[in-house]
Length: 332
Image 1 (spheres, rainbow, N blue to C red):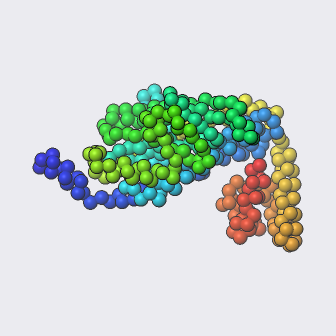
Image 2 (cartoon, one colour):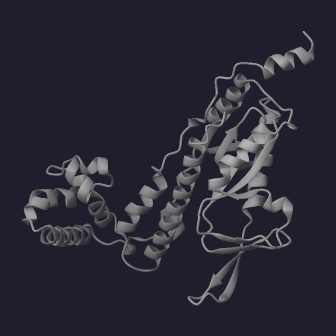
Image 3 (tube, helix red, strand yellow):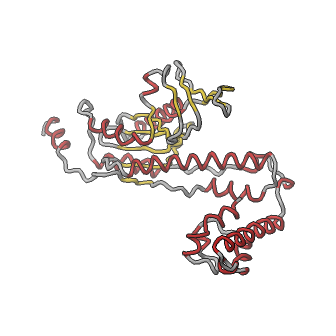
């Protein structure tokens, strides 16, 4: 059989991947976030607690942005394999990937950012964040490490990693996804080679569909090779090592509030909330939740809706109605 005949058989192969398949799925259950929220609840008010609060906000924004991208991919119905949150170690390098997409023609590496505020990109491709006053006047400019440069570095590591392990020589394309719909980016002086790699999450489907349908791209691999690449990356994923937050924030024993203070604060806030709800709904306080339930909430400090359902006196109806506020009080 000639090479041409082999190629034609490959082109006309009956494809089983007809929609987006996540082999390593998205999850918002981030262990670092859970740890930071728990740490925040134990710290006294002050500079360190504010640092932890800031990092919690940034982490939540990042997860929310990745969720936007995940939903766009899920509803794209493109014939691709997807991997979320992949970390590889290659020689002396480490690369963390938000999303890796494997299509019949290319591999895509998506870097996802929320990028709050107004961003301008200079003619050199540098990212500058504009710090504005309430009136909208630019007060200062803050340089941001280019996510384009960072993602290109990760792409180079991935390319070398796959080639040296004889897994794939497919082209690897770097794409930077802005996941915050409120972000404003000034592209006036931005070089084309940079702007062509930046787009909003709601255009992801269009960009990928155009690339896969591009008739000028003759790359076309069988599905077994797509799975080979995906499974190799999945099997060699190295989970992020736990960060020593105590060392990072330089926390000492004096920075913690006592367990008794935590119990008292949570108890008082839950009691106030219960009283407010009872007045608003014109019902007895025990009908919101009883004293026994209140004490069990303070003792066990549930962190999720699933854990709330394990508290005696809180059924699904009450968790749906009051659960989010109860959790916010416990986690505050």
